[in-house]
Image (cartoon, rainbow over all chains, first blue to last red; front, side, top):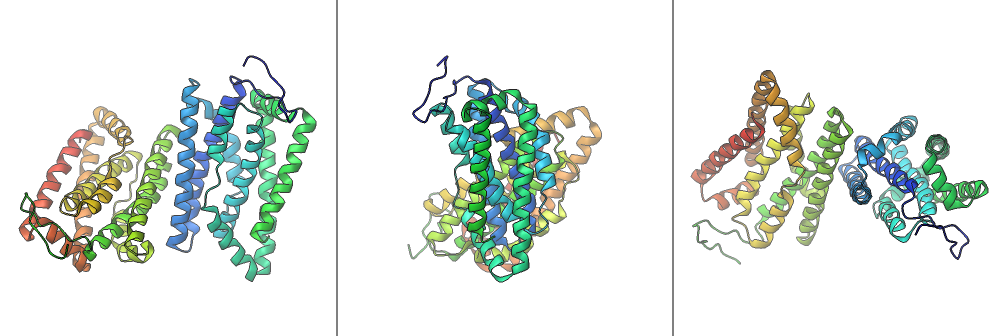
Length: 226
Length: 226
C-alpha cells in the first residue's frame, strides 16, 4: 500500500497511512461533537416534548458516530482531542454564523447542513481505502430521524408562503456559510487539502465536487418543499 | 399470573400486567429525557473539551435507555408520550430546584442523583417479573463514564477544604430534593405507589427502603471524598 493506484473510475486511491486521513477523521469528530451540542441547545425551540425527543435521538446518534471515530483514531495511535483542536475554530464559526432563531430554522439546518457535510465526506470516502471509507460512511449514515424533519418542515411551508420564503433564504445561507468555512479549513490544513485533491483528481475535480454538492443541496431543499 | 406469590425472600412478586409497571417505565423514561437535556446544558460549565465529550457520552447513554423504555412501553401498547405526561412536573421541579452553578456541582449531581434514582428503581425491580426487572436494570446500568466524575471531584476536593464543604452540603440537598419529589409523585400516582408497596411489602418496607437509600447515598459521597 505504499503507492497510489488507479481505480476503475480513474480516481486515485489514497494510501492507507495518508496523514490527511487522520485530519479527515478529526474534522468529522469535532463536527459530531458540535452538532451534538447544537442539537441539544436548539431542541429548546421545540414546541413539543415529541420534538425534543426526536432531536435528542439525533444528538445521541452523533455521539455514536463520535465514538466510531475515536476508535478509528486510537487505532492510528492518535489522541482525538489533539487531532480535533485545529478544527474547533472553523466549525464553531459555522455554527455561530448560522444560529437558528426558530424551531423550523433549526430543523432545516439539521437536514440541510448534515446533507452538505455528508455529500462532501462521502465523495472523499469514495477514493479512500475500503477500511477508511467504511468508517466515513458509518458515521455519515442517514438515520430515520430525519424523516421527522421533512414532515415538520413540509407541513409548515405548505401553509405559509412567507415561512417558505424565509426558509428558502435560510437554506441558501447555510450552503454559503458551509462553503466559506470549508475554504477556510482547506487554506489552513495542507494535509487535508492534499487528501481532497488526491480524492478528486485535481483543482477541476474540486470544482466539479462543489457543483455536485450544490445540485444535491437543491434536491434536498426541494424535498423540504422550499 | 393472575395472583401474587411469595418469593424465597418473602417479598411478593408483582403480576406482569400490574398497571404500575407502565407508570414505572414512564417515570424512568421522562427521567432519561430530562437527564439528557440537563447534561447537555450543564456541559457548558465544563472547562475542557474533554469534559464536554465525557458529558455528551453520558447524555447519549441516557437516550439509549430511553429507547429501551420506549420499546418496552410499545410492547405493552402504551404511547410513551402519553405515559410520561404525569411525571413532567415533578422531575422538572427536581431539576429546577437543583440547578448546578459550577461544573463540580454538576458532576456531583450526575453521580449522586443518578445513584439515588438507581437505588430506588433497582429495589423495586427486584420484586418485579424477570422480564420487567431486566428492562429496569438495563436502563440503570452503570456506565464507565462515571469514573470520569469520581476522578474530577476527588481531585478538586482533595486540594480545597472549602470546595469539599460546599459540595458536601450540595450532596445533602440533592438527596433531600429527590425524596421531596418522590413523595410528591407517590402522593399523586396511586398505581405507582401501589407497585412500590407491593414491591417493598408494606409501609415499614418503604421506610426500610428509604433507610437503605440513605446508607448508599452516604457511601457514594464517601467515594467522591465528600
